[in-house]
Length: 112
Image 1 (cartoon, rainbow, N blue to C red):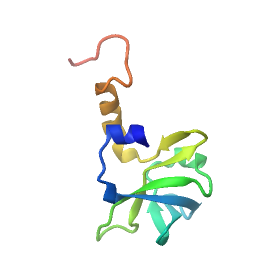
Image 2 (cartoon, helix red, strand yellow):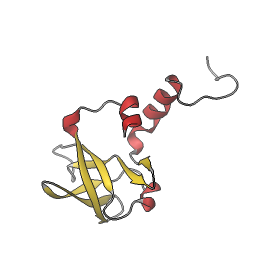
Image 3 (cartoon, rainbow, N blue to C red):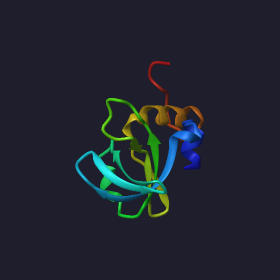
Image 4 (cartoon, rainbow, N blue to C red):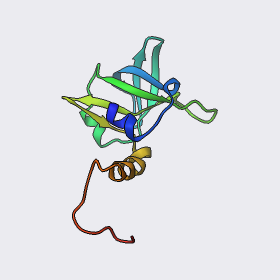
């Protein structure tokens, strides 16, 4: 998660460490933390097939009166790598990754 923190900034009080338990429905899973079991929202269903029981997951606290879950799943470990699973931040991550020189492209960028 160090790489992700260098691309996107989250205040520490909104990130919660948890352990994945199971999937309840298409967009909702259950996790456990030191404070009990909670339901979390999953934004990216494609990569979720790689998520297995008892995997460590960071959650983003997203409390709000209109929400059904208190947390969003941000990422999970698969083998030796972090898989970022929250599609809300994809464009921001991609743009920041390119602007910081972590990823390069050959040729010219259109529109510049």
